Length: 68
Image (cartoon, rainbow, N blue to C red; front, side, top):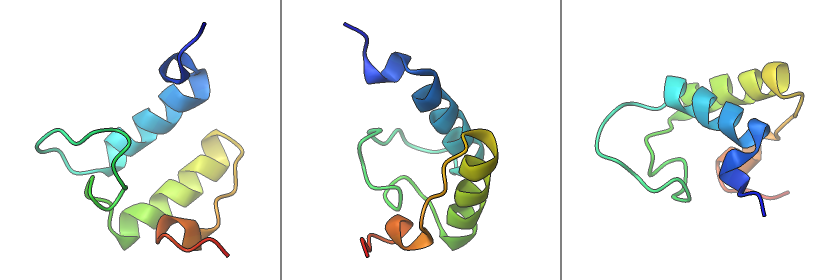
């Protein structure tokens, strides 16, 4: 059985996040993005890069925890 971490899209998203998020103490990958250091500028960059690199459009509100 293949792990989600072995999925090429998961690996690309993690690579994008590694470029955006500040370096520092390790934070679990399942932690909220804010806990991982994502700010509003980083969130905007993440949305744009996901659309370009992976072909996924993420509603910006989802990054703030809103689901509507």
